[in-house]
Structure formats: C-alpha cells, structure tokens
Length: 220
Ligand code: SAH
Image (tube, rainbow, N blue to C red; front, side, top):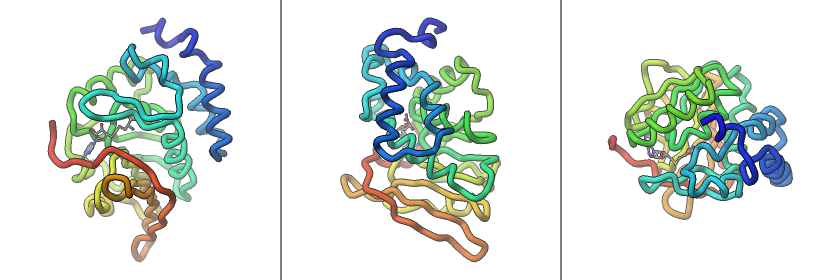
C-alpha cells in the first residue's frame, strides 16, 4: 500500500497538478478544495487496471455497475457544500462508492457519515480511508433514502446518485441553515440542485445539467 500511496508516473503529484489546473479552468475557485484534491491520491480508489486513467476528467467504472464521479463533479459539489453559511460540523454523504468523494470531504469538514447500499463497495472504501488515516468517517450499509437519522441534523448532505425527486427523509435530516447538494432527475435529464433549509421552509436552486448513476432503493 505504501508504494501505492507514493505513486509513480501516471499517478504522481505532477499528474494531479495537471488535474487541478484543469479544475481551475473549469471554474473551481475554492483553494481548500483544490489543495485537498492536489494532495489526495485518486488512483488508489480504483482497480489497478484503471489506475493510470485515474486523473482523466471522466467517470470510470468501480464495479457493480457503478462509477467513480469525475474530478470536476467532486470538486464542484464539494465547493458548493463549503459555500454554506453554517460551519460543516456533520456531513451526510449518500453513495460512498469507491470512497474518493468521502476522502475529500473528510479533510474539509468535521465528521462525515457515509451511506452505501452495496456492501462490497463500502468495504473497499473503508479500507482505503483507513490506509489514508482518515478517521473522522463513519459508514452505514443502508438505503440512503432513509438518510441516517441517528446523527441528524446535518449541516450538509451530499448525494452522489440521482433520485427522480428529493427523498423526504433527507429534507427532514437537514439542520436549519444546512445545505444539500443533490442530482435530481431520470436518465439524461438530470440537474444538480442545491437545497437550503431556512427557519420557515426550504429554498431550492437549480444549478447545472449533470449525469449520475440512478439512486436505487434497498440494500445489496
Ligand atoms: N462519490 C462516489 C460515487 C459513486 S456512484 C464515487 O466517486 O465513487 C454512486 C454510488 O451511490 C454507488 O456506489 C451506488 O451504489 C450508490 N447508491 C445509489 N443509490 C443509493 C441509495 N439509495 N443508498 C445508498 N447508496 C446508493
């Protein structure tokens, strides 16, 4: 593992520098986000056969029909979350996948609660975060449609799979002043949305078109 973490050739710091330059060209401005993405090895989150492509600006397969989100989307969602007015003490992530977004979040917020419905993906993600010594993360094997009520309310919620509409339980688990970043819609017509919980209700902003894997119910 240590050799993996050091990285060589296509997986080196220089390759990540190029990724970060591209993120800046794409409009990512938050330096905390850019620094963390510069310093986090993305290639250890995928199978060795794909590791050399880890820094391309594309979603790549991680098994079980799922994909690791492209760097731009990870950066964008994280930046949107960090723009929230509340300090991000507790963040709920739905769709751990390979754990890359989880690792980025863990370095920027107080504590991450991450829910995944596919057990083997969750197991691998746990191991990787352990290797990176990121300890401020708890994992739950569950259908994220239920959120994670035990630790609610959350200052931030980040959803990495697209439901046809925003699950009611997630709205309920937001703190007042909290934000949720979530792709909503079916197939090719999905939209990134930001929900902010106010004293007297919820504010919804439609941000940009996106493509995520579908939000599915039940556990596997
Ligand atoms: N940020 C992750 C995204 C993985 S893809 C990464 O970069 O690796 C989305 C993930 O959401 C998949 O792992 C999928 O299994 C999971 N998912 C989909 N619907 C879910 C649900 N209802 N509850 C929990 N996880 C879900």
